[in-house]
Length: 384
Image (cartoon, rainbow, N blue to C red; front, side, top):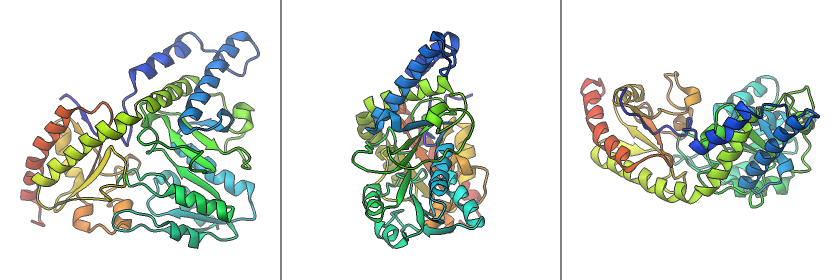
């Protein structure tokens, strides 16, 4: 196998060595149940409390506002279903057409079950107009669910302005913040969302664990019912190794925030400029300025994204044609379609997502290897 050049960090990330070292003691030695009455379990409970504080610190939240889950999808589902269950007289939902499938598929299912949904669109650059949210909110709106940053293009949504609107209208606001966490600052003190979802494996933590922020005072009904864990908000024995890893990953994310913004942003820009300048009929998808520092989505006209990925894979280069949760579909990305990207570009779009482990040499390799791949595929394309 070739040396892997990993530029698919919006799909998942390498687990940081410090995270692994933090997890090992609760796998090997401190395996007790944090709900047990004995001291052995109590010691594990203290590690659970420490992780809760580490997650809360990243958000500038109170530890009591953090509920551990199995990941971003469960957090998204819990937030939306809790809002509906706690306000049964309200049956209207506001969301966007470019959400991650964790929200998109759930809301489509709710629509089929009789809930009314207002689907908000975006413009050609991927922007969401906050005035559209204001117009969409009604007296029977139970929740507005809008992602903080798009997972495919990296475009940022105006969550601060949307939060001001939902506060004014007295409507609950959930944001899927899975992609923005660890890449840009996000404080629930500055942006008063009611629910926020985050995922461990997007910030160099382990898979299978995440968290849901629930603002203090917000009415809440649990999604998973059973034991009293998580103060009755999420039943089931906690995934302690995963949670301890998530806590450490959050601590490291706060520490590396400047690096993610500045160094990784410069690497992303150099990659993007190198590819766009050397490959004709290529274009950037989304806003060049208002986006995550690690993400670029580039469209190569007249070729198929899957073919590009296969040839890059032969060289050990890992990227994506869109969300990992929609991979396998031959349909163009729902995000790019909502943005009005032409068919011939949408089908040939590749997302590169970098991390603090990405090197200059790796960027040089992709800039060198991708142009001949595109040229080779265009020779075979019926559109050229």
